[in-house]
Image 1: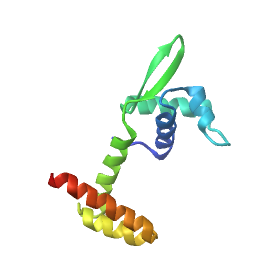
Image 2 (image 1 turned 90 degrees about the vertical axis):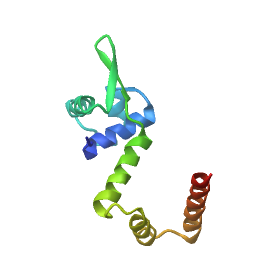
Image 3 (image 1 turned 135 degrees about the vertical axis):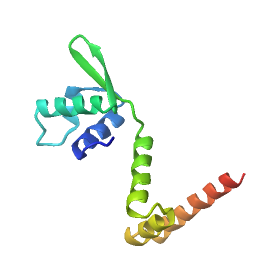
Image 4 (image 1 turned 180 degrees about the vertical axis):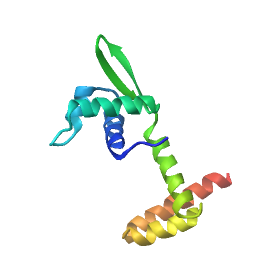
Length: 123
């Protein structure tokens, strides 16, 4: 199950806020803000999809994420690698490093991260 772009935007706000009432989510949007009914619909859809849940306080609902940001992002990246790079992480890495205009220092930092991960896996 995936989120639409707008649902993803709401999810970003919830990850940042950790928990929020609808008015808090609405306040997080830049101007022009969407209609309250639009945000209510997005929150309902995201609840139905199992990405968020809420606690009731009288008639007010305090929403919170059920999915961690890292888990969501990891699933996205793995899907990207599978669907666009023939399930080849090296093809993805080649594309990423050549097409994103990374500086030499950023490439060195990536190399360091990869080297550290290799060491961890060898232990």
